[in-house]
Length: 238
Image (tube, rainbow, N blue to C red; front, side, top):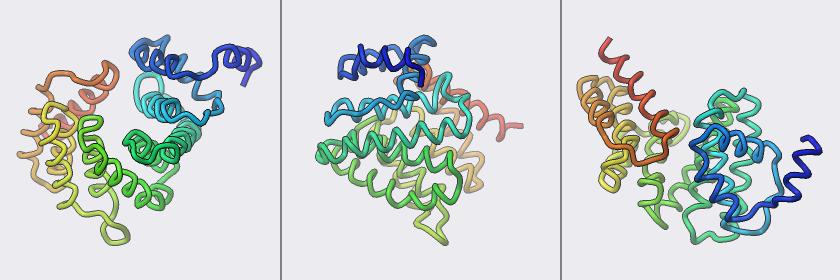
C-alpha cells in the first residue's frame, strides 16, 4: 500500500456517510476504482456495526461486478477474506441484525469458490448456518437473499459427502420467488436448478421469464444478471 493511499485514508477515515456514498457511486467506473482501492488498502474496521456490514457489502459488490470481475484469483481470495472477516465483526457486534450474518455468508461463499472446491466444502456448513440465522431475522432482506443463497448452497454442495439436496434447493428458490417475485435472480436460479436436473423446457421458460423482468437492483448488478441469463438461454436453444 502506497504512502499516498495511507495519507488519503488517514485524512478520510471510514464513516457511515463515506460508505453510503461509495455504495451510491458504485455504478460509475470512478466509483468502482475508489471502492476497490479502499478494499485493497484493508482499512482497520472500527467497532461499529454499520461500518462493518456496509464495508462487507462493498466487498461483495467489488469482487463480483464491474471492474472487480476482472481481478485475479489471488486478488479475489484476499478481497473476499477481508469481506467475510469484516462481516464477522458485524455479527459479533449485533447478532440480532440480519446484515452481518448475510454478508458474512455471501463473502465466505465467494472466498471458498475463489480458493477452490475443498475450501468451499469446508466452509459450506458455516455459511449455511449464517444464512439460516439471517432468514430467521429478516427473510425479505436483499430480495429474499438468504433463501436464494441457501438454495444455491443446497444445489451446489454434494449430497453424498455434505448436505446438498436438490429438492431442498428448489424449496428455497420457491420461497425466495414468493417473497420477491420481481427479482430476476430468484427465478433465474430456479431455472438453473431445473436445467441442472434435465428439464430444459421448464428451465428455458423460467430463464425467459426472468429475462423480461424490470430492473430492481443496481445497473452493474443487473447487467451481470442479464449476461448470465443470455448465456443460460443460449446453452438451451443452441
